Length: 244
Ligand SMILES: Nc1ncnc2c1ncn2[C@@H]1O[C@H](COP(=O)(O)OP(=O)(O)OP(=O)(O)O)[C@@H](O)[C@H]1O
Ligand SMILES: [Mg+2]
Image (cartoon, rainbow, N blue to C red):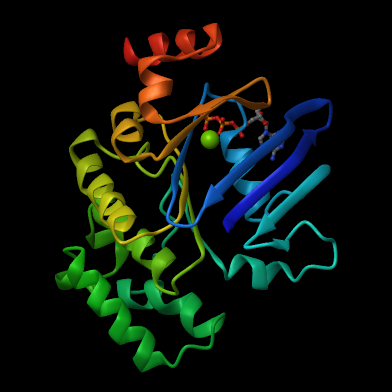
């Protein structure tokens, strides 16, 4: 079954018709990477799935449940989705361990000791074992972003949404974050990710979605999209982004 299905999703900001009928699905354990020019609607797409933006038309299903139904409990939907965005949004006044376990304790009602054990295990696994009791400002950008990812996966979400998670990082620190995403893929996480890192997209994606003109213009395997793009717009975008 698909973890995520979008059917004819439209989103407008005033006269700006950003999403013009997006159809998309993400299967269980699949990694789908969204690429496209700045302003093509990648973040807006992510934000409609997380219900930060309400769609103007169309439907979004999460494991078969219509989450665009106006009667839906938004907090319950969000609790099923792990989200990491470009700017680390760790709470500066909270230690790493408390940042990571907050949602598990407050939203999921996980007992504090259970959440802590699981968090420490994951932080150790991802090379952050020494940082458990530190405050975020003692961590590098790459470490902070890895903490944000651990926080997002702590409660085993059905879907991970990753939006440009490396674009605010020093190039030296990008690799450690991308390695973590590779580990998550190897463990079978289901992910929808937007990135400008084309070599990473190519290596980690099961499918690539090229957003253009408010909808997915071309969808295919990395081999198809990078090796044999069918649309002139896709070719033009790839030529521009890989020759910077
Ligand atoms: N909250 C908002 N209010 C008004 N317009 C918005 C809002 N969010 C996004 N937009 C507009 O929607 C369009 C798509 O923006 P979006 O951030 O989704 O693009 P993107 O593909 O993520 O770009 P980038 O690669 O730069 O991250 C842009 O024209 C943007 O100005
Ligand atoms: Mg964006």
